[in-house]
Length: 448
Image 1 (cartoon, rainbow, N blue to C red):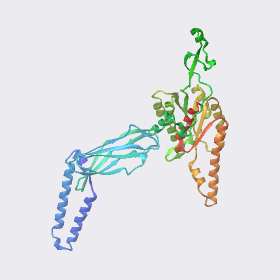
Image 2: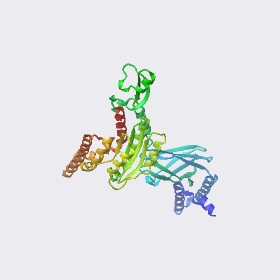
Image 3: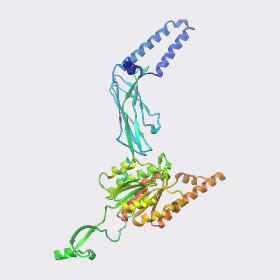
């Protein structure tokens, strides 16, 4: 009895059409009190209605599995991007049905309206496509797929529950890495505003020993090889390609600021993944350091095939902290981890010039040994406020304060440049393209 109850009664639902037909029968009985000529019409109509209900139930339950549904997703979701989700529905009935599909998406999306209506012919297969945009890294729990089936009569609806529950991890943005790969392998760098210049001198990466010919630099003569060969031999060198490129990510409270659903930390993480991918395509070594009140994760620079996966696995778990960053500890970590001069991209944020001055001594020390690029963010809300016309005294005050903060950001860039530190001031949505462009420019100018 319990099995019958679970299999039939729990999954049986009444439709609007049934209540409409039932209401029509009730109206006929009411009219019979005033119009005797209706006779047995109300009873006949009610009987026909009851028979149709039983027929509808029978044809819906004659197949144990009249509908089949499956959900198709990638093994992991990309943070901040539109991730495609597909649901495939198959009709196994011998007649056409109307289907309402409800997908139980993870609670993080706070969606209660992910339901779809479609008509399926006998044995027809249709697919439902939609996208989900996560804004936080972590695990997302998908639930059941529920399908409500109506026959052509449409009086009764039968529910099917498909156990497609799964937990998917949300990783830093990886869907759009392809467009940055194209930038990395393209030789048309001038399209991105990059001008290639010739670097004076040569690197110290040895290539081979060859016979001296006119025009070779006499400083490269290899006297030992010359003595053995009996003729002048010179060393040749190639441009050193495998430079260390480290992304340093600030996890302190200043990176909690939200923008379009993502925190500044998430934007920095997405940009770091893209930059690491491009750096390895350009034959550089990519590494990672995270910092808050203490040093967090460290991934030594490398360009092996699994390096990007290692970086993403580390960044997948990172969260913002509630204290200020300890740049003294960062300086010590950089000195101990990064042995050779390399490119350091430091993702952080400063809202005032005084905050920058507190950290500037440590930044200058780091820049003494490495090429340091400091990346911080424009406050887009203040920028919008400064462009709107003021309508009253309070509006003038707000606009003046906004312009003051914007001007301070520009002063920060000048202050950093004065001490030999490159700076990128960008809106969060433009962060990745700005950082990749800066890296490609430095690479084209052979500064790394």
